[in-house]
Image (cartoon, rainbow, N blue to C red):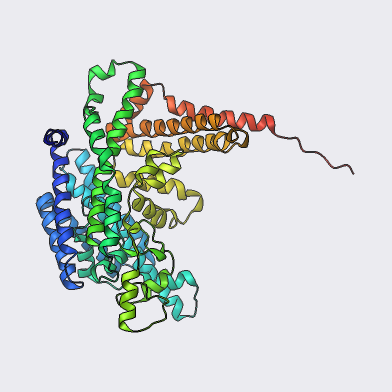
Length: 495
């Protein structure tokens, strides 16, 4: 057992070891903060811990985190409310992109931990400003007697905040380096302990996440022998096409295992602290929070449990209701491991991977894009820009629509074909083919995350003859031809 643990530690790079130590500290602090009283004590405990983390891991570059928060608040003070959204979005992404460009061109070294903190922070700050703007705007509409359910919800979802509140929200140690991201509303509800999950709520959630480590750890040990650095050697360049295609599999597997390790442990920290807990009956979703009776939840200023819509009663009865309330931590659920590993289309993978960020992209990019026809391209572009300014990221994300389109065609033509579904054997074969194809698509695209350069990525793809681009285009063309050939001619009605 000790040997296995040492092998895992040795397989980590210095940076990986630092991330693991940050997660370990977060785990300890999560236990402590779960016992802190709500309000200022809990707020300052989270903030001071976050400040300690930032200084410890980011050194003097932690000043960029402060500048990020200051820039965000300055927008809400100096810019017209109508321009809050575009100015904040552009300004913060310009800031982080500039730092990254300076790093890429070796003008200035960007600390990887600072980059990680700013990746999380840019999403948090944009969501805070957007929700604040919506709250202010919709309260004005209500004062003018323009009311519907969505307007009412947006008017109460965002509590009032000032510069100090934004500072606390930014430096909260929970998810500081790894996520999952959370809105200011979720943070506010945790700090003020508006919902109090019991141990019986937490333990099943923790065990559900920890059980995956039974598989993750041995697989991590096995696949840790496959290094991405090998891609840049002359020896790899001289290998066969089949070897290059096969080598994508262990690299992407290792990539997923690293993400599972970090994100699942981060989720465990949130659960231990009671962060992101909402009653199950509110049907919370990753990132978003409650989706049922959300207005009633957000409009209450005091601590609540199942009392929403209850018939009242004595203090003893209300406490009994509290004890009977079941809680869910879906709001801070960032990863559906089973969903990712069993995905049959690329869209399935997207929905199950980094779920809180996926929700953010839909909520604050897709839905906010003023040109409907550009919503999908804009979302893919922002997603690539969020990951970094390397050309490989953009190349990879811009190929997703093509490969996903072919996967959807395959699903409709075969997996949803009634004739195929009648045969269990044929249906099983088609399912396996779809699973293999989807995973190979992701293996193929993931190479850009290792090679980073668009030129290097194209070079690698060319070495395997753009195989999966070819498969995707072939599926699309075959579907087009079959539709043309099987299209029934229009029967003209006799006059």
